[in-house]
Length: 467
Ligand code: TYD
Ligand code: MG
Image 1: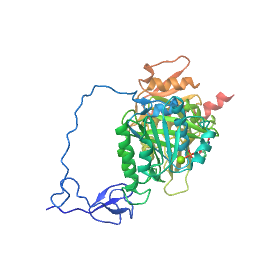
Image 2 (image 1 turned 180 degrees about the vertical axis):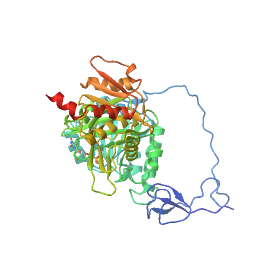
Image 3 (image 1 turned 90 degrees about the horizontal axis):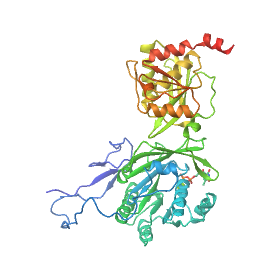
Image 4 (image 1 turned 45 degrees about the horizontal axis):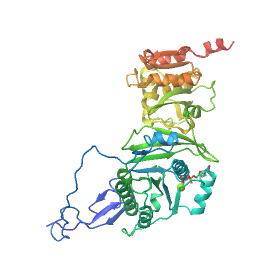
């Protein structure tokens, strides 16, 4: 006969264990296992409360009446694109980000924009007092809208408040970490409370058809604080990111059940709130020092949109036994790979040099298409030869040293042309797609070919050009 089980749940990652341990096997965190519920779950056998007999639910067809447009658009282009065309009715969206990054600002602006379009919006804040929120709304010129406001943290009270007619179009809960429910007896902010609170809000969204946005704080490690389980429960997860010292913010889709997951929205934080940046390339290119060696412009793609960004490399003689390799904004192991390919196939030696790689403006690149731009920047820095300032680079490098074609070549070239660049170094075959006038396409089949080209434009030739 099965006995009631005691289980231990990790407060960090939510994994369950049958025995207590100091360290969670799931995430490696210490002292995070807590004893929880003794319910044996489904089929725990006799001795348990008699199980309720199931009630048949009405089956229905795929086609049928849908009451409203399934999405509500804010008219803030960068936000609507990231959500895949607007907030989806009946869905729950999690917006994560560091404290102070601008989540409340973004959602206040979105709430105001939606309210101006005739939607009923409820903003529930558990973090700030009504006066604080009003102050922010005044600063954002959102105070004159019909957004309804409450400062509350109890889940039952919130549900009673928002369960009114007409049904709200969007409910914003700021933040999920402040929610607590009578049903669970642990402290607010603990895994059990956050999970129960999120579950109640998701159930509300599904049953009423209102869109729900949950705000979540992110820990130092970059995860939504407390349970990662909330990420699995919601329909979409957006991260709001930014670098200290920079004014721009990137809204990135991590999960989306109703749209693409590779979109970004770019904003700039000003004294009047967040401003859309519809041409991010101009932002990431910033002020360039065009004569300095070690800088290459990468023509990248973010979802459906091309983004140009400068890659900066510094290769300096090392005094250390094991030279340093440091990367900001790119993948560490991809840098090692690119260095190895340059050493093995192109005879470029980095063994005695420290290598630093930085993506300008605090931007993060995840595309392999950046390989060629990185290689060009590295070689340029090592040789002390500046790359042509009017050139962009893209192409994936394979371990054999060959340069492979990447998707969306035509779009990348078009963006470069639009921003005044005059040439592109790209993989073989890329130039057949589009040939803009007054724009040179240099097809490069292999990395040794690229290195030879950079070397050929070396100081001797440059000196002649300068005269
Ligand atoms: P906030 O939205 O409160 O952050 P979060 O909700 O993610 O914790 O944003 C706080 C920061 O934004 C704060 O440092 C001040 C800055 N800010 C501006 O620069 N301009 C503005 O108009 C507003 C409202 C905030
Ligand atoms: Mg906030």
